[in-house]
Image (cartoon, rainbow over all chains, first blue to last red; front, side, top):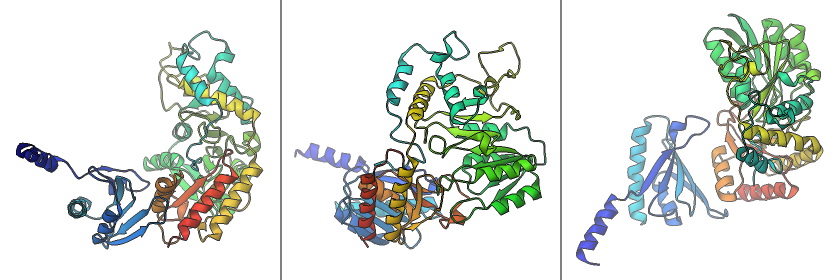
Length: 115
Length: 374
């Protein structure tokens, strides 16, 4: 790749977000539930296994579309299925926005490591 | 696979889509505002069919609107309460009953009593009678069948007791009309609210309220009616008095079609009951905590699975297996403390007349995989 093109690609990579998120309504306090979408990758086993750093990971590879869930000690919950781009996160009841930022930093680190 | 019929039915009555499309594409008919023959009027057609279905000869007492929520708000917020009036309702009610009542209670207009239910989601009749005698309510509101457990209430007995004390009775038939016999006269319902998009197999955006000639409601929405336009207030004639605004004509054309199809094709409740029991038994045998309902019920099953929260089970069923179902409180927040599913609610599977034995067996296979996965 030409040096200038390589530089442009690098800038583009930095500008691209690794994930997007949106609020999801549910029966309870909808403000606690978010759906995250990976923009650069799909959820594979490597990514799933790396989520173990967040809390207790349970992985069900025998389901037709393998399911995973993570429960952290402070009450953060995460669930999703393999080969999708989205998963759901339920934030703990207290200090939600602070915890959300912390989770997103952890997610960036996980995505960097698993890419 | 679709097992969320208690939320909205699918599939709909055969041919419904074409009927709605036809009504959208053709020159609009405007009931009360143009000179078409009555048999061309989809709204009049709905009213006539609904009057037959509800066992009422008074089609003009059937107010059509967008949904059961609107109908229930009309019945509750339009009721001529005076401050201090009492209302008795039950713990199995949907938020479309509870929230309007809570609002009136908060404003200080009514005093509200909520009667508990048993572990199946059935009203405790002795507690109900006790509440009636203690409160002497002006209005009593009862859900015909729980949207969480499917338990059908003994409405006839409950409303008989309410009438003995002079109360007006309001029945929420959202979960039953089109599936269960709703004979208002026999049941003693002075008002009956219903939706078109559940077991009537009609389109969303359709519903209504039967109002007995003995009950006069105040409109909660005022505006154009196409009749008596010179009046400053809504005209006294029913149903126009309670039907301000242009109705959703294509949707009511669809509902008229669904009602006509229903008249020719009654649901086989015995077969539906057998399928429902088969699913229930299979789930219980696999260790699911199914809310067991004896006797008369709609094809609704609520359950929890040990070791899983209900949201996760619903997520796996939908994303992993393509089974549409519902999880949570199902907009009926009070019932869960009585049926053992508080605070997170239940996973709800709700069948329809179109659900097959093969589909039930497939769901059981899926749960077998699920419960064997740990």
